[in-house]
Image (tube, rainbow, N blue to C red; front, side, top):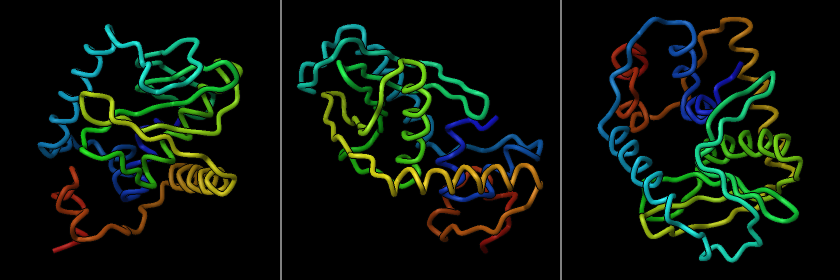
Length: 188
């Protein structure tokens, strides 16, 4: 079963998922990981008093830290917004502007697929939320995004099924912030 959080890491560099899956290594997380955890904890606390009126959506219910699973994937979505005719999965990001990376988009699509099954409603949008005052941006999901998602999932399954040590497509800047930089030895 694929952990949804690993999808973003696979896109960042497929070796991260390889190390998590096949190696008994305790990673050394960069400081920004603990800052992100603190930010998420703060958002969980603020969730209790929020009404989400700022989103101007026909909200029926908002789910916080919703565990989702099917036969192929599992994970905990930061926020699932159930509207009258659709669901929108949102992710908290500890950043000043709601900038959506490819990895975050694929991760949010995975959560959306599972939330759509769970709540029996379609999805066509995802959302990033940043800062404590709910600065947000909604992104449309296209058919090309879904095709790319399928390709990523198939690549992950192939790597896991065949136990392939993948090529690293990461840049020097990416390798510097990787929790496995002391094990990969891909960059000098």
